[in-house]
Image 1 (cartoon, rainbow, N blue to C red):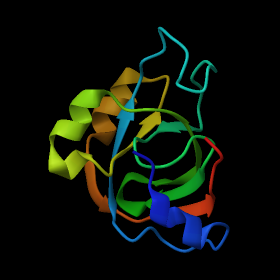
Image 2: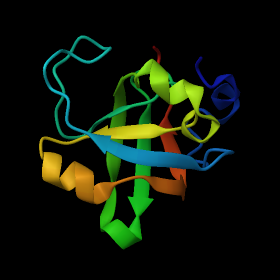
Image 3: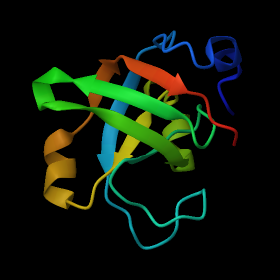
Image 4: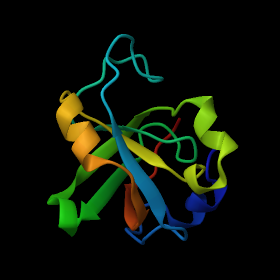
Length: 116
């Protein structure tokens, strides 16, 4: 279900109201929910509309960059309350994804709300 309260902060650059759990994935055997093949800079979320542009900063992991929501997370993520507000960033490197692990309570900034 998309995050409807984002409507009120569209384009404001304000932080999300709830910190997100950020993980990484490497699946590339099928197109993303947007119909595009995954590539660096893509992310998955079940809360944010497709094409939403977000900024993720995790200093301890030397990550600080923009991602665009182009995919949805597996339905299994919704079964666990701490994953419902998750963000899964795509990488082409399985070793990096494993090293990245799960990062809890990360502040994710909406740069531009998507239309999907």
